[in-house]
Length: 173
Image (cartoon, rainbow, N blue to C red):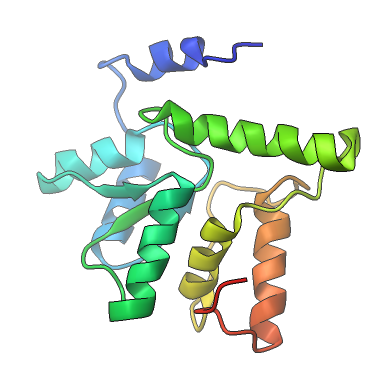
């Protein structure tokens, strides 16, 4: 195991890597006002966005960043401009990835080893943003099977159940 993710950091630091058409599609979707969530912690979508539009893309990767966005929505509406939501963190912010890994370890310690295979929910800060984005919106999933019992599918199912019951997506849990 590579706890510092040094192998991945070396791979993603390779300046010769270019975004592909999927990254470019997601960059265009963000520019047009779509809300995009990703479990990838590479920066290819951000690179595609900056190449195409000449400005950096705002991202949210940490629980604190998700909480700040949710608070802003609560007080004054949607933040201006596109934001890429990185559910599992970003390689440029190792603490955001460590938080995802430590959350799984904590769940495993509390609920036993079966927590490593699910269900394990994303932190409430991230689920609150998902709720806000999904209320009255169409969900389109690209390149993700949804066949896992890890954090994303249980969290989306949880959010959709709350929305169907009329639980206020603006409220905290």
